[in-house]
Amino acid sequence: MAGAVFVLWAVATLTFFAIRLIPGDPAQAILGGPGSQASQEALDQVRRDYGLDQPLITQYFAMLGRLVTGDLGVSYTLKLPVAELLAAQLGGTLLLAALALVLAWILALAVAIWSTGRGRIASAVGEGVEITAAALPHFWLAAVLIAVFAAGLGWLPPVATGTPAGLVLPVVTLAIPLSGFLAQVMRESLLGAMQQPFVVSARARGESAVGVRVRHTIRHAALPAISLSGWALGWLLSGAVVVETIFAMPGLGRTLLQAVTLRDIPVVTGVVLLVALVYVLMTVLTDLVARIADPRLRQEAGR
Image (cartoon, rainbow, N blue to C red; front, side, top):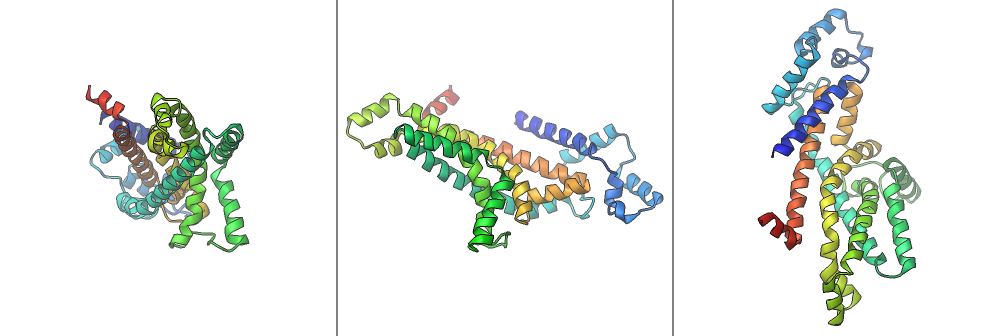
């Protein structure tokens, strides 16, 4: 609990001071940007209303005080409570990240199981697939998928349409690079598990190679990847900034990009804190899942 509170405080503090480094006047952004040609009197009035005329350290502690009470503030540009704004955008982004995580796991398991223990050629092909997938940048992969499956073949829409078909390309864009990381970890663990005595014993009892992997080694090989899934969700949420922008999807990532561009500080702080909170919760959840999957971890926790 203390660790989670520290992470959230650190994220809020870094975000507060980092957003102040972006060139531009927050008061100008509140009044519609430089194009609004707001008068000096209007700018001064906005600074007083939002506390922007106070010293930076005073603004910082005022922000912390609001966060402690659960008040995320009001969006400078949309004039809506930030909590309400985030609640409206959270579902779409979490669905995108969850589907991408599931697909990444499926792809990683398929590559790791197929390429492990099948000789040097299969191992080299598996490593090549994993490294290539992990190195693909989201923006490049999204452009290729749109060019092939939307513009070329016409199978899928190039932007999110709110239908299942509109989710396919964004999910695949997020999942493929992550599957490369997961498969690398999973294959190394699978190789180690296959050298364990219980695997030798299973083979001696006449179990097939597939049976040994499915019944005995996958659970052990999946443990490091399970632990990585908490980090993976945070990674997916950050990748959603690019993917939601390219595919014109509503969500936290696109909201964050627009808020940074407009210097909408309450929205930026709210999105970053929410992502950090999800990351902390996922880390706790993956630890629990790892203990369920591995009896040794339960024994260590019980000591």
